Image (spheres, rainbow, N blue to C red):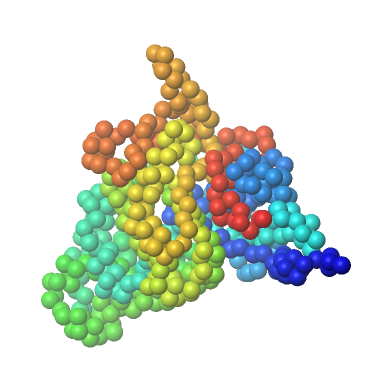
Length: 472
Ligand SMILES: Nc1nc2c(ncn2[C@@H]2O[C@H](COP(=O)(O)OP(=O)(O)OP(=O)(O)O)[C@@H](O)[C@H]2O)c(=O)[nH]1
Ligand SMILES: [Mg+2]
């Protein structure tokens, strides 16, 4: 007589059981510069998962399409010392009358979600319901740019920060540049003078941020948090030209007394690295399995060539720190095991659907170098465009017999507009693009939504790529 189960089947079922009984966990890092759309993405992610199977439209996510994803609930987060991700305040803002965008992020927050789903493959040992625990965290984008700062010593950081970066940007630092011109790096440090110059440098960074530039370090100068006014935030780079005036060799420079301007600034830079930047990354960017890099490509395209190049420089630096190959900084420091990555152009609802593939090509062009390295390192990468919270509707306008796609939205000041945003280039724009400036981007207010689930574009595709394989 045949045994009821073959050994192979028993082994397989036992394997399944072990797999299911092991609590499936996933830690997702959402990476993006200031205003890239991290908080909107996280709010929408939580919202879509909570309303999966009911109101959320998630056709590109098989677990939801097949009715197997049953929803998600918040669990107590592991670190009780960190505020909870403000999902409820974000939803209240989006459901207010008139609707508002969630507030810019001022500190770190975390959230743990438990997803309930029915496994796709059923066996006699497979439970009816399985769980996936998802950990997410949010932080101000300004602080992310401190990551590349970890790769430098004070000298190389000075060189990187003071290389020519375009006239418009330079003009915003004029007051600091004038002040620093007469500084003697070998002289004894005058605390008040250094504090004033650091304040002028921070002021330059704030102006550059307001003017749409992205490559801004140190990040805490923009958003100091609890370090406001502390000496650790009173340093700045010394331009090569200034150091050259004193024609010091590297050895002479490093032998300057501890209380000299040069040594004081270098010590504060090191302290900043060790006590502010390193703990931030150690505590929050360690041990994540999946990553999504969000980029506001359209915003940069709208802002002109100098800011577009600035974004490209900032992202390339940032992604170098996340180089998943052998020599990467993070691999050395914290050995993360990221096995899958998405890069996404956010706010895709600012262009008509016929432009979406161009947006993705442009994003890939912007991140060409880091993408090459990621592919070489064997990390699967998906590029997509998405709108975490869609704020426009598509309309077609008939112009002399031709149907032209347009966007219907409400501006931040409350005016309903029909918008023709124009063509997005599918590669890094050449000079003539900027001269003709065929792209017009205006901010929209979120749409009032009767449904609990937020309207989106391709959030389901992003969720599927980031965690669909865990929901089988
Ligand atoms: N139309 C549209 N606008 C969006 C979308 N996502 C974000 N935005 C806009 O971009 C702004 C910034 O989005 P946030 O999610 O706050 O950006 P962030 O990356 O969290 O920024 P910081 O907290 O400053 O680091 C929002 O206030 C909206 O104006 C989207 O899906 N569609
Ligand atoms: Mg935010």
